[in-house]
Length: 161
Figure 1 (spheres, rainbow, N blue to C red):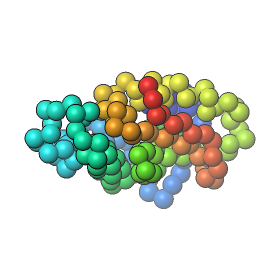
Figure 2 (spheres, rainbow, N blue to C red):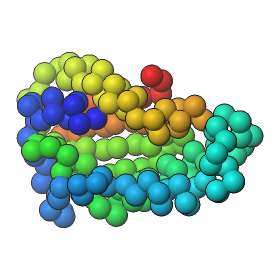
Figure 3 (cartoon, helix red, strand yellow):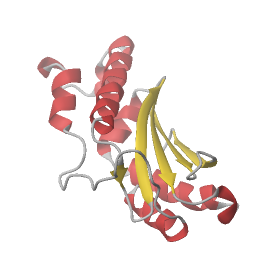
């Protein structure tokens, strides 16, 4: 994700929102151990997720998504680049949805900006082992960018690697 956001940074400008954006903590915005503790009982941790019953896989995925969104939202807005702010993380069915606001108007951007960043976004998401585990249980991530007025800039759905 960092790589793709750097690309977007070259094109877009910083968003202004209610709370002043801050930089993410140096060790990342998510406490992975807390997610694990809340969503995966110790007895299930040694087992590959695909060996769990399907209903348990879905429950685990939904718990991880909800806890991840909760932790992100407690820290938002987060500055992800000089020009881009993550201002919302939500859950939509099996998807974890990240929304970014940039301080520009859609019509100031190249028409193919979404296509230009899609490959970088997918590569960054797919390089994460935790995300690949979520894919294995039917999860996905959606990245949305809006301009400073809330107008859509683009969306990338990562549902396969």
